[in-house]
Image 1 (tube, rainbow, N blue to C red):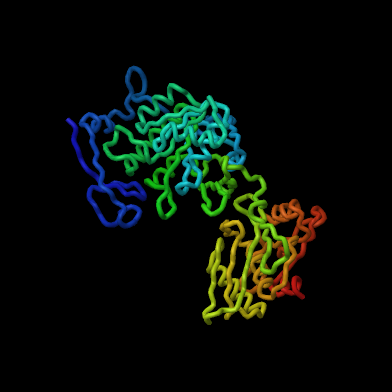
Image 2: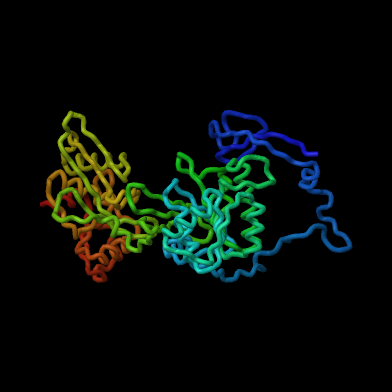
Length: 466
């Protein structure tokens, strides 16, 4: 006879509590405990209890218990992992060189950003047997999207199912090279008596898919919803179970999309992929600077180009600044794609160290393309754009900048300066301004671009506008 009980689970960390509390005792988050019904039979409870009295005993057939045994580390033979190479080079870059067999990858992002589109493109272009499981769309809807993407592969199989046991049975019979689940929040396991999308269901479904992937060697993609705070919905345990967590970002007002790695057991978390959304799907962008450098028909003030890094990838972006007289007496400070507090710090440095009066000026800053940049090396280009706009003097579009600004007005060295210089040189820039502390051990004869060194903000002012 089944015994029914209810318990409370935290939506944030997945911890269980016998009663409702306003604050989770594990993660200290407020109002995250939700009640769920759990059905557990007597036999199941007894089977889950280990018989500790039998541990260490031997029988006539050998040691009690079957399964993996402890093994010395030096006896483990590590072979070369043959990754599944995807036709998407940006995805291969982010995953560290391809898809590892038996891995389980969580794919998160905002609604409508293109998660399903990207993975459906992968299923259509892989050229090997792929099982695409959808709990949100019908087969006809997926077919319409596939037609729009311009692909109709006979190796792509569709399944509209939310029961994990039936899903895994079909996957075991089909034996695909890749399994895609859209989405993990729509699945439900018959072993848990609760609604799909709850903490216990997401945890149980992810555990079942993990066991299936490890036992069969079939790599699995899990599409995950996100909360209004931007984190992946469900228990935090979900991100610990999977081998890699990918975040798909972008702004609906722009066509670009960025694929970031939040966790990767088989590669670096510093890589990122860039895509452009168009009518036929997502296009890989091998040269990100083509999206982030705006085209200008005439020379205008308030614009400077920065050689920045996103993860391990160098790119050149355009910084636009506007400095004007405050109309109502209270100056405004606005920044798009950049930290507003750091902008206030740079303005204070300019006023204190360079003598530029900005206390009664409105300042607006924009990163072209809508991208958000956290690289400290963008400081030098922001200061150059502010000086250009305040003095209404144009900076040549063939000049790039890379440097961090300190509180005393010094220009500090930045990491991976060689990659930044090579990227600017490759794109045809004639000169680049860097910190003088960055040129130690650097051979300027290797590049056709001219390298200028600066020590302080005042030297920047004299070099550009003297």
